[in-house]
Length: 84
Ligand SMILES: [Zn+2]
Image (cartoon, rainbow, N blue to C red; front, top):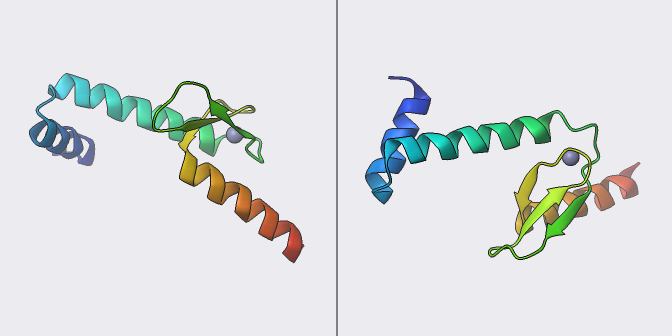
């Protein structure tokens, strides 16, 4: 069994959602990671209106992250400038 199939199975068993729904979520997550990985960078995360929990989208690649990840990414850029 592939790791994807195991994840879909696990998500389905834990939440009660259909395997098809779990598989669609996994596809969305992988597509988002691909956008983020291929971004020309640095990411420019902007808050997405009306999302709860808050979500941030990069204006360059369209990838999305949580508020916590966006905050730490921004902090990392600030610290990186200090070290440069
Ligand atoms: Zn980006």
